Image 1 (tube, rainbow, N blue to C red):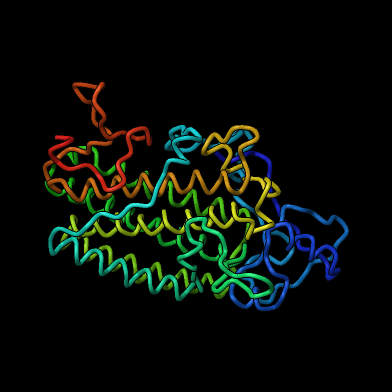
Image 2: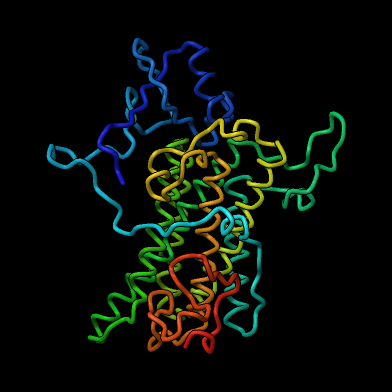
Length: 365
């Protein structure tokens, strides 16, 4: 997973040419506004003769930023492979992912939906996210002439959204897996395969974050927001999962529905030409993403990357809605189980038989 060669970013000198080149490569604004809002460009270009460039809003080393270096003092280790190998997605499977919503059927579902809307409001406020419903799914921009699109999202705003979203999305799986692990130890019983899927989900979300961190690095303000959000969200999920695991899985299912919407809208913006820095493969997926998703040659553009990530979010949507339909203490995890009749569609680790609103208990057990 981690290449042996270091990918480092040396800060540019104060020359405007180098600074603008780096900013333009990732579609981020060069104005002071983008810096104060907590996002800096992470550029792969290296200026050998440049003097260190001071970044007063950064907690990182001024002269060099290292991304995912190999283990220190381990000359015999070439690379460290991923603990969980990602299933292979076909292009058709990823493009067939669609927006879906599971209707509430009881008080637990309604509590989960309201909690998700509250979190969504806070996240939208923190990241400055707004999007016209008319153009959210790839429809033509209704504005004409020089009139700007209302709530237009540019590359920098999308990157802020992605980083903040993924820094929060990795929390529920880890909390649920940890609590189920401790529960299994206390009861001295097996967990029937739930722990592995939940930890793998948290790992997958973290890989999304690490991928985006190869493209842009948050500044101190955004790091502070992430720290606060993680502290509140972790403790809230911890207490909620102790009270009602079923409600928490439904909540995460609804949260993943919103993640699918977010990435669908970003893909639609790229296809509509609203994000020129990300179109036509001008920005390639970083190596960490290519290795993790086994992205084929010629299919490594920003749009392709978002297709992979959206498919992951759709899978998490299916998994959590399904787990929310099961008996929390007795039923096995249907996504890692062997079935007596493989000819019939059933849950699995891939997205071949993905069910957007989850599998009902009677369908899998």
